[in-house]
Every structure is written in C-alpha cells, then in structure tokens.
Image (cartoon, rainbow, N blue to C red; front, side, top):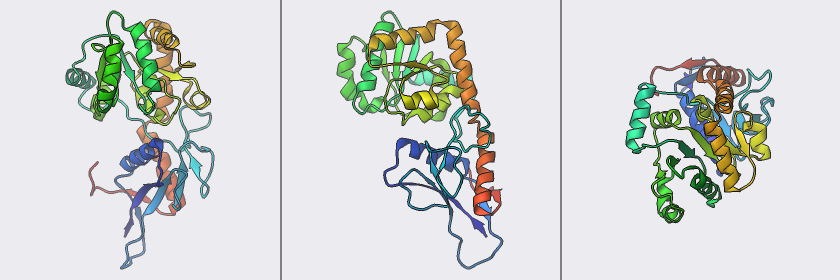
Length: 302
C-alpha cells in the first residue's frame, strides 16, 4: 500500500499560498509514502496545508511565518540567505531551463517582437494601477531615445492601459506580454537588463526567486516586509516619485560595478532555493512527520 501526498490551500488563499502549493505539488508529484499494512481501504493522503485559513492537515505551512517553528505548530518557510538555515523548508526556484539559453532568448525575442535595449521588465498585480503608473512615469524619463518596457502578464490589461501609454508617448516603447511559459520567462530574464517591482504588496515577490536565479537585477519598493525578506539582493526605492525610480533604473543599468553586486547577491539568494537541496529537506520533514518512508514512483510523469 502507498499513501499519496496532497497539497491543499485555504478558501481564501493568497497568490503566495497558491504559488507555494503549485511548486510543492510539482516537486512532490512522484513522491509516495510506503504503508506496510495491507487493507481493503486506501489510506488517506498525507496532507500539507498552505496558508493561515487551512483547517486541518498533517503539516501546516504559513509561507511568511516563523521559519524556525516546528511541527505540530505551523511551520514558516525560509527565504534567501539565513545563517545556519540549511535545514529550513523553502520553495524551489525555477532556474535557467530547457533547450539552451540562447534558444530560449531567441524564441522569446521573436515571440514578443523585441528589438531594443535597454529592456526593462515590470512585475506587479495591476490592481489599482499605482505600481504600473510609477513604472510608466519612470520609463518616460529613461526610454526617451530607445529601449522597451515589458509588462509581464500585461496583455489582459491592455485595453485599460493602452490609452494611458499613448497619452504618455510610450506607445512604441511598451510591450504587453501574455502569460509566458517557463522557457519563455527564462529567455526573457536572460535577455533583459532589469526588473522593476514598485508594488507595496509583496505577494508576488516569490517570483523574484526565479529572477535572481537568472542573474537579473531587481528594483523593489522599500517597505519593512520587502527590506526584511527581499532587500539583500535588490536596489530599494522609496515612495512614488517617478523621477526617483527613473534615476534608480539608470543606476542599475549603467553602473557596471553596482550591477555586478546586485547580480551576485541575487544568485546567492536563489542558491538556497536550488531544487535538489530544497527537495532533500522537504523529504526529510515529510518522513519525520508521517513516520513513513518517501519513495519516488515511476508511474507518473512530471
């Protein structure tokens, strides 16, 4: 008999909760817990609950909780460089993938019809428009001659934002990107010069793990949460002033020495989230909590 591993989220899961569930589901897709007893009834799945609103689970994870907490209490996740943090639970970063880096870069450049540099990416939620407004204001100063601003996931918001882009004189500079595959994102992160995250809400910051793993520098809004968790590898910018963000973008692109520091720190941050080391820790914890042995099943494809 084998026992399956199930990942569940609460009824009001955040974007971070969903992302953790998705990445753990992929990581553990082939995992099975051995059950020595034979029974007519299949054993219930071993459940890992993600988020603060999960009612019951064998192992409860609060992604931004205390990373040193121990089961049976809610366990937090570790993020980035933590002293003596080799045994912390983390989610895996999606590093450079598939088909050769040059192939990924060529494919996404062709798919999005990219042609100019500098190439600046925007990551944000598009909820109230405040983050993207800062981005547009900054790019109006930075991309006066040439360059491109690429809105990740922006295609579904194009009808609302296109008039704003046109009024700012950025119609030829802004690319509304659709949802991209992991290989396309890998190529885009490799080919871009900078990623900008001006949102106050850090719910999407988990995606920076992948950005760091590709050696792409990041500008991030300076908030207590951002500074405490994500600040080490990033250039932090205060407030909503587009001029200040524009100056920071230029600094991160043109100052070669500073840029190299951001890249090195980002790679260090992402290294703790390398898939193999993350997998080993999760496997050990699942075995400790369940009292069973994890086996890798050949029956299911990734």
